[in-house]
Image 1 (cartoon, rainbow over the protein chains, first blue to last red):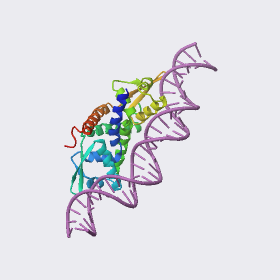
Image 2: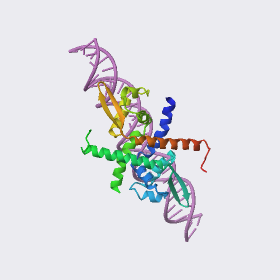
Image 3: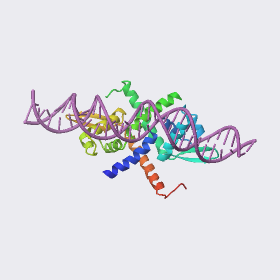
Image 4: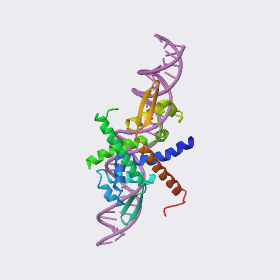
Amino acid sequence: MKREFELACLKAEVIKAVAHPTRLIMVEALKDGERCVCELNELFDADHSTISKHLSVLRNAGVVSDRKEGLKVFYKLEVPCILNFIGCITEVVETKARRQLGVVKGK
Amino acid sequence: MKREFELACLKAEVIKAVAHPTRLIMVEALKDGERCVCELNELFDADHSTISKHLSVLRNAGVVSDRKEGLKVFYKLEVPCILNFIGCITEVVETKARRQLGVVKGK
DNA sequence: TTCCTATGTGGCAATATAGCCATATACTCT
DNA sequence: AGAGTATATGGCTATATTGCCACATAGGAA
């Protein structure tokens, strides 16, 4: 029971890593292969230091890996099954949206 | 692009809901059907108010639904595909553990 | 009604997270 | 070496999350 909770903590760490809009978009942007930080930077308005920190959150969680090539650093998705999850979540969001519009409304 | 970010925010909300060890265990506990709060309470040391708040986080996110029956309230998993995701995450955790033990170590 | 049990909520303090700026590192080019 | 580019880190403040206690609500039993 204690043991189970510790395992759950480790899992929660990984999930927390993708539980942010910016990092979610990053993961989706990596679905077709690696991207350099400079490319990922262009997807957002935020300061480059902010992007860099988000990437390190994903890296520390083991969700992505990085590879240096000259001046550039390329990030790659290490856990493609996360993409399935995002699809699953998208369903939830759509269902919720429908329910809040009153189309389903409980029953 | 702005639109994409807003959608990502909605998704992140749902993911954040499961990004906590207690809530993760709750979701797993619901995999075989509904459970009353009293049963879920027994899984943790925490105060019952804490459990109640965690459940409302899951409910607000649309991950679970609740049903009253007399004094008891039963919670049910609304998004079974989250279970697949948890399986996916478990892999990440194991891979990470192996890597940190030096079994793989980069290459 | 009064008591008891199951669950939810308000409020607070401790901790964690986010994002900016400034600065550091690391590589390339001249 | 010095200048420029790409990326990372330290430090700070603002905001969000967590978990407890105390209290509120609601249904069932006496």
